[in-house]
Image (cartoon, helix red, strand yellow):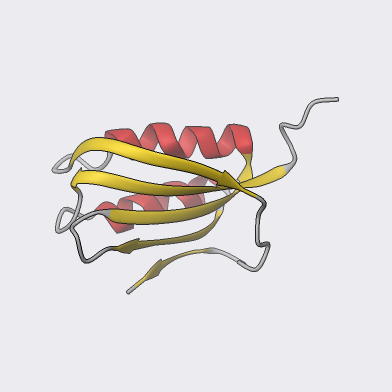
Amino acid sequence: MSDKNVNTAAHLIVHGRVQGVGFRYFTQKTALRLGLVGWVKNLGNGNVEIWAEGPKETLQVLIQEVYKGPISSIVESVDEEWYTPKEQFGTFGIHY
């Protein structure tokens, strides 16, 4: 049996020039288009943190898009960790 429709969670830390370039809005727009739930926020060290939940195949599409980022960003690396989803989110938001 395939698990492509089973929800999972991805916790991502995005490194590079990813603040002040519309990265959170880009991530939110992409996640909503893909039907994912969770959040994105800037970290004090200049990185961006993402928690996203949905089918693993769809999360992998989000990760591919995060590596591209908005036009003015420079993504150097993305740390990925996989978890059991919390299933407490109704949409994908931006945390401040």
